[in-house]
Amino acid sequence: MAACRLEYFSLVFLSLRLFSSYIASASSIRGVAVTRLPFYDSSKDFTCLDGSLTVPFNNVNDDFCDCGDGTDEPGTSACSNGLYHCTNAGFRPRNIPSSRVNDGLCDCCDGSDEYDGAVTCPNTCKELYKELYQKQREEAELAKQGIAIKQDYSQQGQEKKEERKQKLEGLKKQLEEKKAVVESLKAKKDEVETIEKEAKDMHEKEWEETKAKLLAERDRASADTAFRALDTDENGRVTLQEIVDTELLDKKYNEDEARELLGGYEESDIEDFFSGLWSTFKDKYLHKQPEPTPVGEENPTEAETPPTESPPLPPPIDDNFDDEDLPEVPGDEDDDEEEEDEDERDEPSDEFKQEAENKVTKVSTEESNKDDDLKMPEYDEETKAKISVADDARKEFNDAETVSRETEKEISELERSLNLNLGQEEEFSPLQGQCFDYTDREYLYKLCPFDRASQQPKDGGSETSLGTWGEWTGEPNKYSRMKYSGGQACWNGPSRSATINLRCGSTNEVVQVSEPSRCEYHMEFRTPAACQSGDGDSTLPHGHGGEL
Image: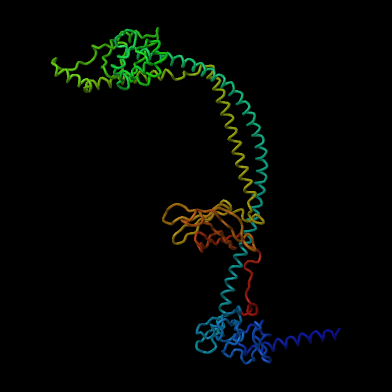
């Protein structure tokens, strides 16, 4: 047993001596990291680390670059691609390009890169260690607080998720009951609507029949009025000459045109006029007369009213029309004045025009009153009662259906929330429904986790969408990065998007926003929900902590 122990300690002692020899040999090999010491053995020729060349060891750090990879000059600036290793005792070792050696700038905190004495570099490694140590202590404290808050977030999130599950189950049961009520009310509604439709259809059918008769009577009355107006000699026939002479059609017709209007005949009686010609005449007859009141419905007062005067041009001629009612055209009896009178008749005077307008206004009013007669009358009381019952059934059904749809919407929103990935332990749940602002020199940014991101000019203006919630995209920690996409399109560019990098913090806040690429925004968001065990652990070098 003792022999084994002796052998073990002998091996340890030998290893320490070999390592010490490497350290000793490296003391004259400036810029070499401890991990590379075995490649720099002063008792042997030096082989470039890329294996391309072997040179005498004296060529190492001789201020001349022999190796293509620069490994023969780690402590000089001879090789542009070489690396100088800063030991930085008491702080963190660091590699710098060997081209910076003796360039007059202090790159290593221990000042070893400026050994030619051109500048004096103070050793600041201990001060840097203290600063970093203090910073990491603060970060560790924040991480500790953040992790405690995260645990509370997780508990809140899990409780809320359970509440949502229970609420969802209750709503689904309620929805089944509400749908059953809706189906029952629909059956009731359909039944009373059928009764309502039958009653309304019957009323409307009767009215359509009545209206058709009324229109037929009016059409016949209009035809009679037109016939009497065209039959100027009142002989019961409209002749070819009367058509040629009349001013009551849409234009002046010659004999051939008039004969065509009369169906190829020289004249027409009232029956032929109505049955065969009226359909053609009605569109050409300019001044339809007020239709006579059906027999038995005369208004005694109106019947006693003396006839109004009517000019020979529009408005139309009615049954009481008399040539004596025409306004007289002033003029003498000589031939020259008669010619002038004829010209004046061709162009009605202002007096004629005014009287014509008054007559047309009266006829228009009467026509409007007739249109009112063509409106369907109100439903009878029995039909109104059936409509009222149907209206009540429809309202009851619509109200129940609205309540059912609202429940369906609530279920859909709950299912969406439950399907949302809010972290491994629901730690991001408290962030849902909140928004966090960040302001820089130009914009106000808004981040609403699991919803949207936007920006808005500080001096006012509309809000611009930077995207809506998409997915977790962090690596290797999935929950370290959020992606928002589908924002408002840039001018001649892509749609805006935002990447949210999450960092551990004791509070929820957006701490930085940038736009590294056009229309692609990056935000740094600190939140306790992003804290992980181990955040804030010290990564300081060992060996000098006791000196603090």
